[in-house]
Amino acid sequence: MDAFGGLVTLEFQNADRALKFVNSLNLIGAACCFGGVQSLATHPITMTHSTIPDDILASNGLSPAIVRLSIGLEDAGDY
Image (cartoon, rainbow, N blue to C red; front, side, top):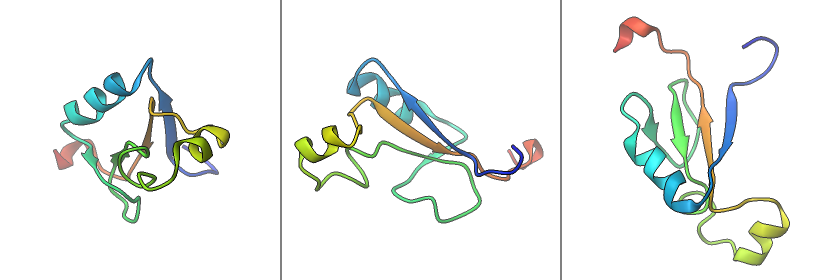
């Protein structure tokens, strides 16, 4: 990527598929925050935003089907 950060948002058909995706990742770990330089995934509804009421989440466009990926700086040889 060039001239911007590496945060990608994916929206699945439903929350079950989103969680299945996060739980099936092998090279990217699940985390609540993107504080480092490694690749991480988060399911905001069950992690970082779990205490926010559903109506507020929905009014801000955050659905249970969303997963966010922070793409890090790893080299293919790191794995």
